[in-house]
Image 1 (spheres, one colour):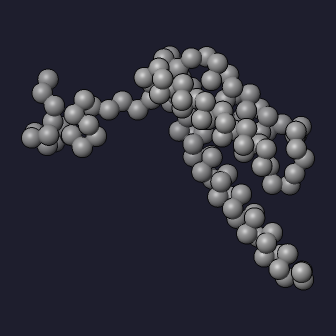
Image 2 (cartoon, one colour; image 1 turned 135 degrees about the horizontal axis):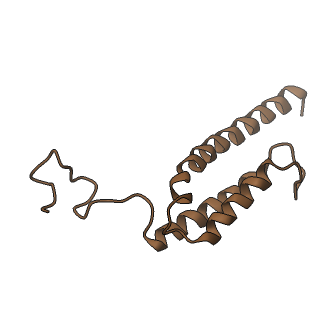
Image 3 (cartoon, helix red, strand yellow; image 1 turned 180 degrees about the horizontal axis):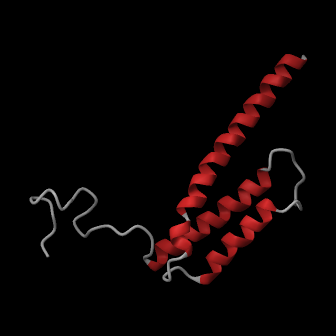
Length: 112
């Protein structure tokens, strides 16, 4: 394989990892609400913070240039946090009539 093909493969790999990192960053910022919610147990919150510390620490289990293990650890911690929030009933609150009901629409709005 010539150097142009290796360059293309490297650029594609960097773009894919950057895409995953962007999605992960959005999910981390969305997790802020769950971290301050009293209904979510302490263990998933602690796991999340350990994963954040591991991600920013210079120590790696798998030394690699694209941070695959860091992203994986953070994804597992976020999944555990969201699963614990779902089990405890925390997270986004929805109205009993469903997400399509709104206050501005009196036909679909739930009775109080």
